[in-house]
Length: 140
Length: 198
Image (tube, rainbow over all chains, first blue to last red; front, side):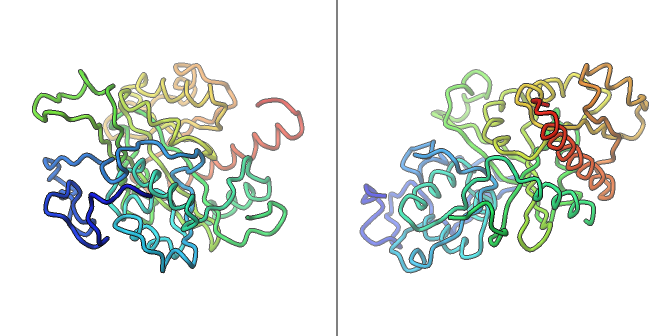
């Protein structure tokens, strides 16, 4: 993703006037402290929809080996690190404390750039898989 | 990428949607069985919130943020079941398509004191041909209705299961999930043999 120069030359640098807090900073206490208002789509450069459809909230994201050494910044780096083990878009959203839509846009870029991979979406679940789900749920 | 005929090697994620009116017990339902704390947020840059949200206090607010119920159950090493609650208020209806896309099936939770709160959900799943069932959440101190009465009041197809549940109890929640997965299987088998849309 180009055009991030306003965030400073070094990915770890936080310009004093940055509109985006560092991802590690607690973003408003999740419970109770919701008075601090942040525009969630700031981190996506204002985009609210992914370039490609297909990333569902439960889609599992896997980091590719190259991604872990790629020069990624901020949220992109954290997403890749989280997805060393497969994580759903929603899992990542919880970990980053970001809305689903924000993570979807970021993850979509990372898929595009080859840093994340996703499994092909199963259009219609195979019958055998449905039977397995029935079995497993009843064994819970 | 993965080939469909090969055994599943990397994990597969499936999703069940939990729906129903505001305050009907979706959070409790998901929390009763989930392995994780049930909360995720969604936001949309929207002008639709103007006039609905009170934005006068926050000048320039253009985002609506909503907390969604979210749960995960590891069914086995390679199979994850995610639960997502749809937002209860009508003004968040724009999130539904994204949440429901690809869902295995849906559970409509119902509070018999506010039956009409679930009409929108029932309509949605009927229109989109998504397997669903109705879970009548048992609240203390409320009159119990016969399940047939509930079915009649909702005007749903006789084949849609209507069952009683207690969203606070894990075994009851598990029972609802079982009933739904069996419904999904039944509908798939019926369609395979009849070739009909149902």
